[in-house]
Image (cartoon, rainbow, N blue to C red; front, side):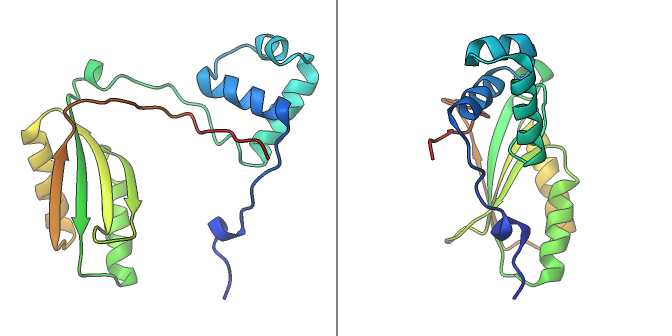
Length: 165
């Protein structure tokens, strides 16, 4: 049976300089190349070549601006737990399309265990969540939905742990 892209992907070997560069970029991807080079103790060209290689290898997937949800009026963060009795490819494709089409969904995961999927969504308030919910269940058949309102974000980061080999 052919392997999926995730199964085919192997971990990239990183040396200490690569790990330092990645740590700096995770903190602030807008750092000038000169600053990165100074902090890792290397010159600009080798650092640029390493960053280019890390992009080509898929270690660096992109660069984004991190926005403040509350400043945008998105004051409610919900974790939506979904159970379904449908597991056929057609249902899964419809569900995936429905999730991807909704900008409120910032994360979606398929899980092992009693819950099949979990979504992390940001909306303005409970009424906006209800509109999201009603729209989703009108599009895709779902057995059970549980919504958990986050009362306080205690830790949030986009930085991945970069472990030595």
